[in-house]
Length: 223
Image 1 (cartoon, helix red, strand yellow):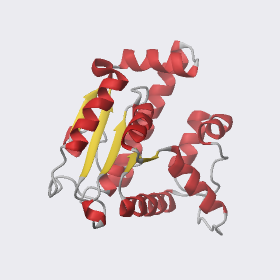
Image 2: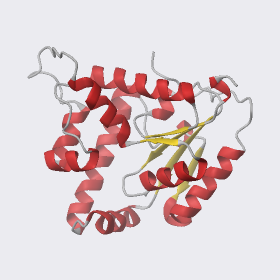
Image 3: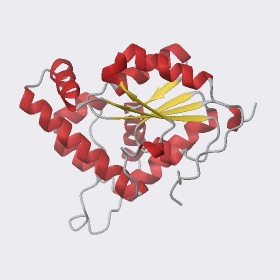
Image 4: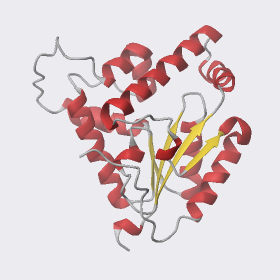
């Protein structure tokens, strides 16, 4: 079986929609590897060993990693990813390393890529299902309050910040709106279906991926 015949799944999700947990559930059901925080950990581990020489560091726009650290705080980043944030990682290197890692994972197939523009990186890969999980704001706020033990105002700020971060990430790297449904094959409201029901729908969709399917023409991976 060639690598192009193996199935792949990308999941993009709104913060607080349960997307990461749903991805873990799917990984267990399908017996596929799940690449979510693991991508950041792999990137940080590899990049800490590299010699960095970032030109005009004080003049450049803050990198996505720096924005994430600013939003979560140093301790929050370390808690979420079990690592310290990578040092001196600018956006060009971030994009290159993310693409390389995701493409390497796709060579093996039978994996779930969570976020990181996976649907854009693998837009031309056959037998790959691209899913977007969303939920109404109030449902997201309630979930973040419960899961992260935050106050309502803290949860609202965290959600707004993560939405802005993901919007900027996809717009900057892929010149697209991450909430645009035309970039996905399946969009699911997790507040309606619940985490288990959402996973059920995605498993069913994976089982019905055609053996030969041309990727949608509107999705373009950056050159």
